[in-house]
Image 1 (cartoon, rainbow over the protein chains, first blue to last red):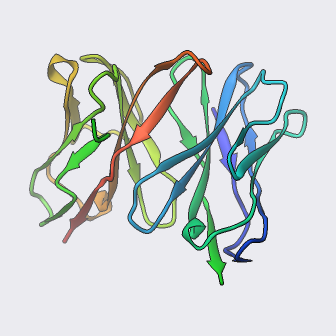
Image 2: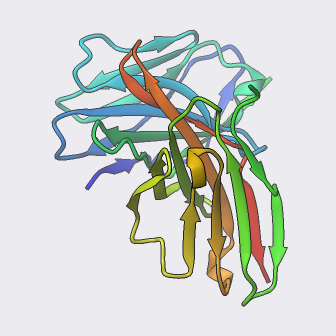
Length: 114
Length: 117
């Protein structure tokens, strides 16, 4: 079974500052993918970034980067230069390469303040 | 193509009634997923289809739930004899293989929010 843990309380971030969202995972699958999604108040899940378990380099997508530490089973999301539009819930998720269904954590609430 | 669409966006029903939700995936996507999200939680997997075949169902999907994807295009999720515990956001996602990088990337619809009174 796959398990994602996100335990940080809600976070307030100053605009233009960076924020790190923690995610740890547990799986027995040798091959898996890690994802981060953003869910604004409108409810839609928006894909942000992906990291494969065999990727040698940490993934980056614009202002998003993923700090992947495989031995520690962590996949933290870093958002640089926060913007007001970054205020949302952020979910870490994982899937195995076989079935591709996603297992999500409980999410991190981020509020960006001017 | 405007992405994954779901209908209705909101549904209020009385306990014991049947409800049906529809999901229209991105047209070239062969995989379609249903998830349920309750307040304060992340989405939980319910079931997924590859083309018209339902390949996996979660234990969360009780006998009152049924999903179909005729002809491998749109999908419907029906809940019979609704209970208050069924109140949640029902999310649909679709995916296709992307070679760069190699993975199935899931794109979500806006969800259907169900309230059972």
